[in-house]
Image 1 (cartoon, one colour):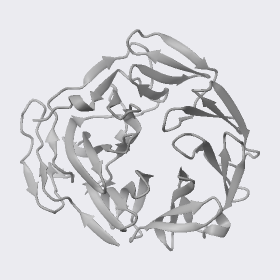
Image 2 (cartoon, one colour):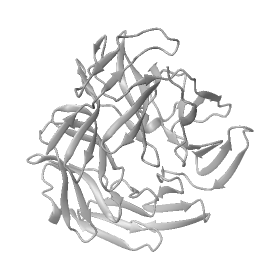
Image 3 (cartoon, helix red, strand yellow):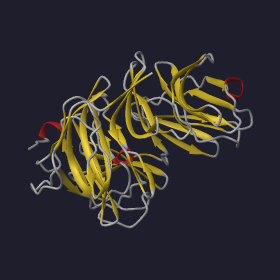
Image 4 (tube, one colour):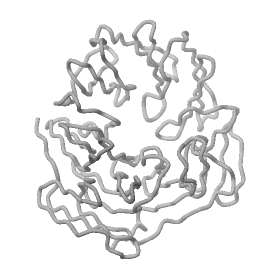
Length: 381
């Protein structure tokens, strides 16, 4: 296993949008770049520049909380409130009811929503305007979620049988995987499986073996994709960009950050660093564009005993991160960028809902405005 840290020709220029200098320009060749901002917070990125163009900000007159907002797409908000799902137009503020449904999750491609009521999963298809109801048959189930980006499959864990259940929402055919036969479940934990090209990928932790990411076919063939070398290592989030590259954040080889893993070459590349302070270890969060070519990520900045965020956008190319641009500086966000960011389907724009309420909490906090970023309008110094 090869571990590569840093990218050749790194240049970081950190300044305020008004041009006021915050810290020195840092240059490095083939090394991890450590940028100090009062305390040691680390950020590694390629060709970082500072955005001078401002995002378009649209104020919300309608009361919408973060917990109610499902999706922002161009001029529309998709909102779930009480027991119904509706759309709201940002320009004319007109709302239209879609269906009587309390949505739990939106599929990654935005074509379906999942609702769970009384041990029954309901999948609503926006294109066909039809709902499919799927009984889970037991009370002892874990979280019911979509398993794939298009929302064709849902999955849940049955605690009575130690089986993971996958349901094809189009045919209602169920496939079960016996985790007791596949893994040693003593002192272990695992994340919800993600389906890519007919195979399942999931994170697994065992006290004896540590953390790992596995690939599992529906006929129960198990393959190790990536093992983590230290017991203290951890996985927060991962996904496949394509059949060759996996992106994840967490702690790998005792280093916090965002990593790109070349599966065929078994090469791990840390592209954004996390940090450590007196409160512990922090890991940057990320959001990948639908076409898999762009990455939003955030890093923590400490100022006057406050935890603030810098937000960047960069280009993904192979297992490298290129052309990073800082778009938000020292802002207080209600959640990490993984949760906040919304992308257009064509990956040409993204949206970040913001609040002026700095009190703790997320789901019940009202959104005051939406920052709209069009990729081709992000200008740099």
